[in-house]
Image (cartoon, rainbow, N blue to C red; front, side, top):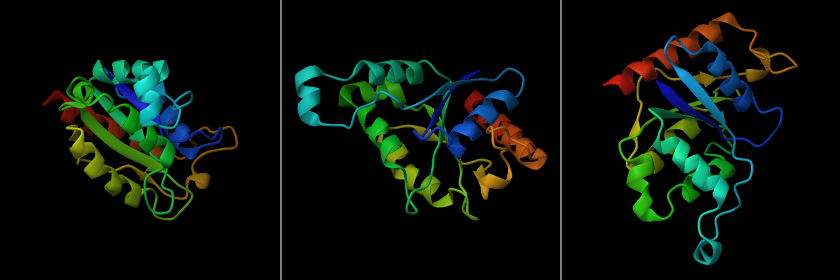
Length: 182
């Protein structure tokens, strides 16, 4: 099973990128995660789309999603909602509208996240649901992966150091794989 894993942060020391890389390493047997970033995706502008079309980096990401068995969004939570850079990428990946069924139609999508706050990314994850519903994705409602107080589970190099969190990540990935198999 092949999943696309997208970090919703551009920051080098992003807890969500750290979580994504930890998930790549902890994937259960038979599951491979392909990590992706949002680098190279410009701000959406309909005039630019009309003039030059969908940017090459967006087309690459759309093609990767369209051929994957599922997608995991590793989302930060900014002001109790979704991060602008990830929402921007999702907006681009819904262009042109006729391509949405190929890319997202019934595609299993899980949302996970890490935050320094004591609540993890619970609010952002809930806020993704209308977006995922609108593009026709199939959201995963099984195990939740909210990593709270993320500064306590990663070391200075970004390596996951907490065994309980590692077990939780593995269980989340297995649950998503099981969901995608149905």
